[in-house]
Image 1 (spheres, rainbow, N blue to C red):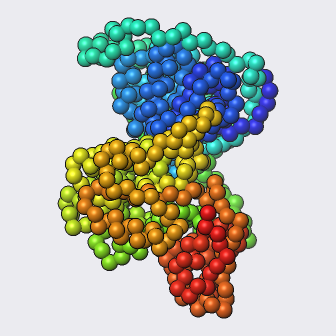
Image 2 (cartoon, rainbow, N blue to C red; image 1 turned 180 degrees about the vertical axis):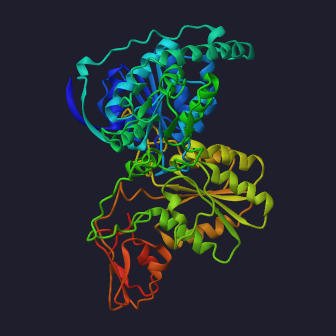
Amino acid sequence: MHTEFLMGNEAIALGALAAGVNVVTGYPGTPSTEVLETVARRKPDDVYVEWSINEKAAMEVAAGAAYAGARALVTMKQVGLNVASDPLMSLAYIGVRAGMVVMVADDPGPISSQTEQDTRTFAQFSKLPLLDPSSVAEAYQMVQEAFELSERLGTPVFLRATTRIDHGCESMQVADPGEWRRHRPEGFVKDSARWVIFPRLSMANHAKIEARNARLSDELSDHHRNFVVPETSGAPRKGIATHGISYAYVREGLDEASHVRVLRVATPFPFPERRAVEFLRGLDEVLCVEELDPVIERQLTYVCGKHGLDVRIRGKLTGDVAPSGENTVESVSAAMASFLGTAAPSVRVDPDAPALPVRPPVLCAGCPHRASFSAVKQAMGGRKTIYCGDIGCYTLGNAAPLDMVDTCLCMGAGITIAQGVFRVEPDTACFAFVGDSTFFASGITGVVNAFYNQADLTLVVLDNSTTAMTGHQPHPGTGRTMMGQVVEKVSIEAVLRAIGLTIVETVDPLDHELAVETVRRVADEPGVKAIVFRSPCVMIVRSQAKSRVDPVRCVGCQRCVRELGCPALMPADGKVVIDPSLCTGCTLCEQICPFDAIGGGERL
């Protein structure tokens, strides 16, 4: 054993390696991404790791490995679980041979997601066990426990972490690589009665799952991570039930003189009912402190009714805890103070401290997506259009002054939403933007649907040669894998032509005049047509040259500032200046300046 200072996702990865994981799959998504990347960086040679094309593929590859007796880990964020839910729901009925852990990172807030959905609720829906760590060190241990539980039960097991666990850090003891378990897969054993899902098998297995979960609820009541902290004798008959990172907030908010009983729930499904009854007996009321859904609150209300316990359960459903959003030490302390009738904790504020700057998200200086949006906007000026966006860096194209994202639902949906708008408003020029990674993840089916059903839209693929938003992971179009292999790139243009598109044009968006002309010409063609704007992410390749403003030529029209919104451009003393620390020399501002007042950049 040795001590390391680890991020939560790194701890989960090392815990999986210590448990003898053989296969790790996933799709990048904040806050889960670093788990797989840490495995790739620190794995032994016999562990296979891949960024799959999407979460559904990742789930199925991991399931196949677990069928063959390998310990498998699949990673994703909470919205990715939606993509993976089709195979997962059936996998819950089929089961696995070796341990399979589904690591899902929830994002209360949400800080970097479309939704605040709670994987604890998904565990109830899918009838799969779920472990819910409260600290980084506990996440390291619980992923190992999850493999053992999965293997013993023959079913996938969720490990649910949240952003503050995933991205929190802790100094902790971890096993040396020489101490890691070496799991040897036995190989796939043919048995169609087990591995081929038919209604009769599903019905029989459903009954087994319900019986298993009932037994497991009783068993997990004795799990050492589900526990009750007793109150001081003679104290008021009040309790607090909590879980995950909120347990740490509760501990911090309670002083030693707080006469309150605490239930910590580490296995929200199956719920540890017997432990909950032990907690509830003798109490008058309980405050449930949890993120995000009122899972514990509903379960305790059910337990009270089932066992005839006269305990008032309070929490999100009663308005005592905020129904949405991320918990904090301050919000939890305030809720507990109100519940316990104590003084709310004071928050020290330095009156001399400067206000935090307002920093809305923005496309990087020199980002080729800005050039792509600018070209489409100029080409389509004055026409009735809709711009359907997608999930990625290019979602930031919605901000002023670009204002080029009219819709954004989920990955790949922009392509199909554009088709729906076209069916209602055939006189609207429909554009669908999608990134190169997202095209492979979930965009292809939308293009097939559009072509097959004879829609009229312009597909714009923003190809910056990486998965930029989540940290520059490879994808099928990059020509490399997470195992370090150099492979043949999957051509976006070839895929589009294979679908049947006859108009597929590729252009550098930083060649502004050509980009505008291409958009005008292609958009006027009937049917489904595509423009691939290809220019590498500025974080991967950037010019050393910097654009500069000639103060003599600059007349202060600020067209560059008003049209582009590049953070390197700013007005000053009636002119425009360029911050050299931000400028990447992309030359876009040089090309749109009507007075040739900007120069010095170098388009790559």
